[in-house]
Every structure is written in C-alpha cells, then in structure tokens.
Image (tube, rainbow, N blue to C red; front, side, top):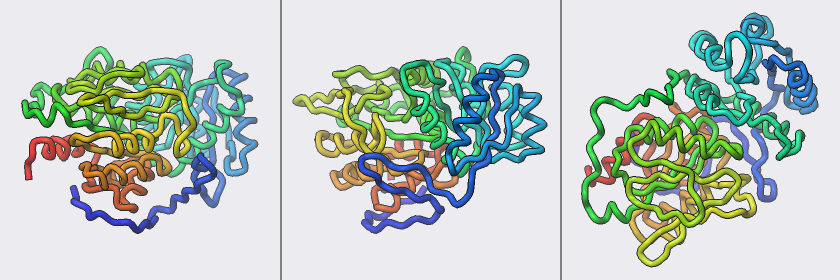
Length: 377
C-alpha cells in the first residue's frame, strides 16, 4: 500500500467523466453506444426490457436470450458489452450460468432480480451489480433509468470472478485473526466505510478478515430498498463481528457493524460520550440516499474520538468530499486501489482531491486497518 500526501488539486486519468447536476450526479459519459444482451425467460419481461432500454440514446439492445443455453450462443455471435440476467430461470439458473461463463468470458453482468437472497450468491459469482424488478413500489420509468445507468457503468467495469459462497457454510479461515486488544481508546474508535458498484463483495472481503472485537463500524452500500437487511444478515453469517441493518438510534459500539438502511440517510450523532446512528428520510446527497458523503461529513463534524474512513469501489464521487472532511478533522483514511476496484470511481476522486492517506487493495485493506488500530509502524 502507499502512504499518500494531503493534497487539494484534482485530476482524472481513467476517462470517467462526472458532472454534478443539482443534487444528483449524472451517469458516466461515453462516446459510443453500449451493446446489451437481455436474458430472461419471461416474454413479457424481455419485451419490456428490450423496448425500454432501446429508448436510451447511449444503449443498443443487440438481442435477447430466453435461457442460459440460448445466451451462450448469442454472446459469441453478438459480442455484447453488457448482459442483463434474470437470476431465476428454468434449466441452468443465473448463478450456475455465471459460474460457467465468467471464467471463460469476463462479460459485465447486471442482475435483474426480485427480492431474493440468491442475488448475493450471483454477485459472489462475479456479477457487477443488480436492480430490483418493478413491484409496484416504484415506477417502471424509474426502474429503467436505474438499470440504464448501471448498464453504462458496467460497460467500464472490471469483472472479477469470485468463488460463490454458500450461506450455510461460512468461508472463515480456520485461524481467527488476532483481536485488536483491550485498549480503551479502541472502545471509542469509530470506523466508517462506503462503497457502491462492486461493493457488496468488496466489503465482505474486508470484514471477513477482521476480528470480532473490531471498533464500531457504520457501512453505507448503495443498493435497492429491501436488500440491505438481507445483505446485513449475509455478512453476519460470514463475518466474526455482529452485523445487522441499522435502525434509527442504534448505538455504535465495539464488535458491531451497522449497515445503513436503503432509502434513509445515515448520520453519526454524538450524545455525550456515546455515539448513535440517525437513520431518517431526507434529500439525496451526492445523488444517493443513503449517501457516503452524508455519513462521512457527519463523522467529521460530530465525532470527537479516533475515527477511520474507508472508501471503496463505486461509480461517481459520493464519499470523496466527506472523506476529505474526515481527514482534515484528523481521521485516518484508506482508499481502495485501482487494480482491485470493479469501478475505480469513488476512490479515484477521493484520492485525487487528497482525501486518502493510504491506498490498498481490497484484500489488504483489513491488514492496513488492523496495523493502524494496533499502532504498528
């Protein structure tokens, strides 16, 4: 990993273009249409997706497939940039299809899923991101806008194939990492972590390498409503510390990692010597709710004890400004490096504006954090 100086100038070296439009960050700008293959066994869903996505000027639907077998042949002949994939299909399901496909053809895949725990198994198998199928709680146009944005981002993503993890068989190493120790200052330390595209598995990679007595953590991961509770339950099964979806007023304490609920803004609040998490409705910040910027900014202003900020893979710049505020307030800050990111967006912007003290790979972030907490030089 690299120790980085505090700096204030910004630069961009990977072709990503971010534009602030009011309170929202617009999608990635590219100079060509993204070629998309739609895979879904439902004729109604296929028609809706192909017609809807074809209305976007930067997307070209090059074809559709009705199942995994059909998709295999069409990937070769149509050469799509991105594939949308239904998780539940007859015959070979989406998860098994990804396990077979991605080691040979590292194609960015966006899952189109109902509220189903299996989506996380598919992400573990290498899918880049996911959207929730319309269920009446959001408009079809809002769904299409979200899917179109994720498709454009996925077209520039780095596909990292991972072995799928069975929820019934946690993949913890047989040797537990050494605890942080009993120092009283660690009881008062707070860790904030933010991620977006590619972050569900990246965050797991960090947390599963940490001990049960880790200082209190708050995690913002951009994902659709309904999935943050299932995600927290999955992490709780696979990691040594307690992990759960936060509720308004939860105390931040050692050994507990709180996942910010989807569609609520999460902010740290100081109450005397204690710290709690506020999870309330509110305007989007940096285009998101929950927002990494909202969390990090609240930590910079409210936290009067040692703190750490970690920014990981994701598109856009959410979290960069808040992390810079944290660093200026004395926090230790870590950014995921380019090579290990699915999308080197949020960590890149944070690095460029001087918010990141240390860069490290996804696999090494836990070690860097532990060395800092233990005071190792």
